Length: 325
Ligand code: ASP
Image (cartoon, rainbow, N blue to C red; front, side):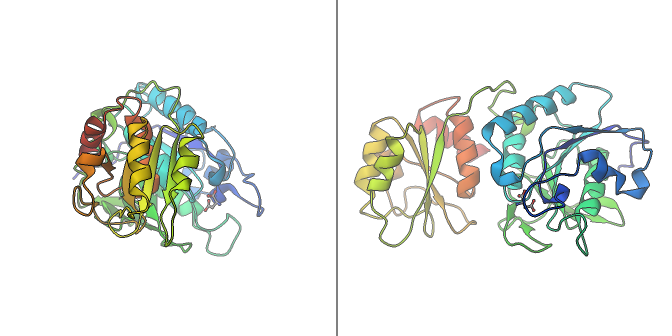
């Protein structure tokens, strides 16, 4: 059983979010003040806090991701830093965590935490989640598991976790479940992720631009003009958030085929937020040059497609990336 690192050095990167929000509109508390709310870490020399940004997470952009990934990859080669914690708003936490899961080039623990309640509200959860994140980031057994997300005492993989409601138990991994739990202030792990992550991904650490990829949400009566409008707006890929198993209505298929022929990547994902999108079942993906999202929800399929497009435009090669990450 792995024991704690004696006085690990942890880097906390604060980005904003409700965990730092004392007013309804914008986050105002600094990462340092979040740490001050945790008694056991008072005067803890080994915890360094940096304010990377101060935004609500709906306002996070790809530029924020690139800055965060570069800072973490710098920390990754610093022998004095044992683990990294990112404090983040919960609305897009799963997206930032997954982007880091695919681009951080280290097996050091990287743990993303947020809060479902603001700091001064009754039953606020931010300090407990941050505490858990810091303990986890210094825990030897947390190494090599990819980017982790911890809220509500549950340890999730960044690949599988999603915000599913607006309560304290908002974060779930609907397909495959949690990796472990925080019990008595210590992590207990029960499984590992199989898919490629961090050091094992096909994506370089040094990224300076991400291709633009849109998500189009299917619904009754969806018409193909939406695809044409997206294609005409300079996007390089489209993730189709299809009904059921990523279904593509007959009315959409000619436009989807045309878009692929014009050079855009087209990924079939599912709006039901869990389950595997079956290839060549309801539609001949091979014939149409479509990519299927495996078990990734649309917002995560978009991130993997953005990164895949930095490596190839070939739908066959991109499918290999979806089948292994
Ligand atoms: N709107 C907030 C955010 O995502 C919600 C939260 O942090 O819980 O930044």
